[in-house]
Length: 238
Ligand code: SAM
Image (cartoon, rainbow, N blue to C red; front, side, top):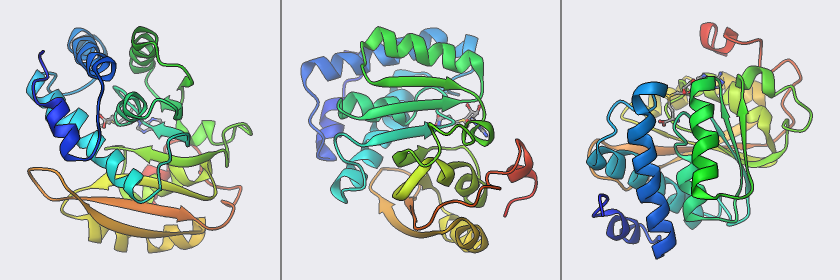
């Protein structure tokens, strides 16, 4: 087994992986290695990096959300800027009843995601190519999800504008941030007001630099003008 610490590491976060799930993670790591150069998926596709940085950190994130009932076994979940499927596909392998949508702007990456979903035999997963600013206008996606997740996609004020339109009222956005979490939260006050959300943070129990989970709960319908057109949230954050 190339991922020698995965099951033990998952167990430390309270997640039990059976043989079939462990085999899915092995296959996922092999496909990441095979596609990484072609699709620019992850900076480091070595087994050690994939196991610790990508799989175990995503499992720790999922476990923290499960513990607080923010993630339920059959939640409708959308992963924005999913890239190589992180964290969405990791969560789906660990909690197979999730109804998952993977949204990613780059077609090369969604080609990988479609191949990955097929290869791992994952049911109830949809892969969408496009920008969040545009797909948030689709009536079947807007306000449709219990939970929106995103990892390493944008600074918090920008991410709130991209992500909250997809959440139902009472639904959440959850993401992970590093040492500047409190600054990002402070800089998000106006975005939270305008978008109708409130946010909390808690520590993520992973080795290495301190990480925090940020959860924004959607209290009201997002005004129709948000998200603004593609590129504007990044250029002129709320
Ligand atoms: N979430 C993955 C991870 O943690 O490895 C990928 C992170 S990568 C740094 C950011 C990804 O977000 C890229 O694949 C990029 O194409 C995608 N992305 C950025 N802005 C986006 C947008 N507005 N709509 C959709 N995808 C976006």
